Image (cartoon, rainbow, N blue to C red):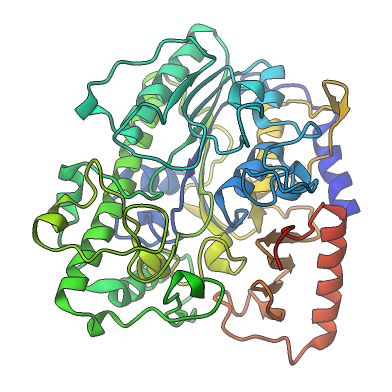
Length: 537
């Protein structure tokens, strides 16, 4: 840990001279998107704009997030493990240093680092890093402009009171009530903020954090109709077809094995192992309900890709695309909350079987649905488990990089394991920006991440290990070896080079390696304010 921290600190401070033309940096974060949902990672959802970025850039096969929305966002923006930044769980203050619910004074954000280097900094979308009215908002942490949600999720169709403009008093775009749809609106403000940077004659840092495709599942009717029949075959067929496409794309070798169906039966069973039912065992009305839920979800992803395309078109029209570093990823694996059939009405266990007119209204204004663990299992294909967990289905994310001025390779894959803690170091290195030793008189914790620029050039990264903890789920990865456990369960051991889908547990065969990696996880936890999860047994 000490070696990795010193290497990261040396990477960032002092900074190199800024490049002759500092690049724009566009960081795009999807919300609850599964590893295999977009086309360039094996999905059948139409994502032509992301697919073009991947075809003309890079795809990482082994890139990791922080298991859930708030921890990932904290780590992404600060370059620290979430517990170091004070956001080991969600936005509630649990009274322990690693669990205060918002980034602490010992942190620097990408926006603060880049603004000091001459950037115009703007954020559009979901913040979800404020624990209350007295905790910092985006414009308190380095962003010149913000439009979006301070909290975690809400209607995509209703602007007030869910979406806000900061700094306070700046004008908002006018929208007729029936014209507002958050993904489209986020695209509008992204274009506005890029235009502001051009007028200021500054490079732009745009953090575009969509709330799509997080529940409640909301989509425009025309987009849903496009997918109305696409999911009638069910999640078993979908998982198999996605893995087949992933092998064809080169994401995995033909030898990779699809994990068995996994899931939950009730919310109370969330921390225990259950099974999603075989699709063909479900009655016709239940299959119709579930296919509609997935169609709405797919429509949300499709519309997000359209908004991304508008941003890319704007950069191209301004002759800026070649010298813009674009990075796209998801905050966690697909969301299984809370059972195979999803929920309705609120973020709880209640499920409604929709038929007839009720079925047709799903996804529209005033509705509230999730799609459940069966589809989430397909969304994370070929991996195990979901958001919340430290198994690969919870933490592995698509990661697309596009930067023609610096990345000459087109359509290539990268196998260097990366993590959201690396994004700040990467942005700083690309911009020639300094990472300071203090902020407002408070010592800043040296970044835990490393710059990904060597990996862009297909060189190794200087790193000893990666580690995770969320809700007592935990993991550590050292080289190809990964030690992982669900909350309250024994450690499992996998060699990800030989077994990327975590099917062959080596813990019983290699107890010495388990002890070694467990000791390293314990040491990491002690150094990084991992309690873990205070108040829970």
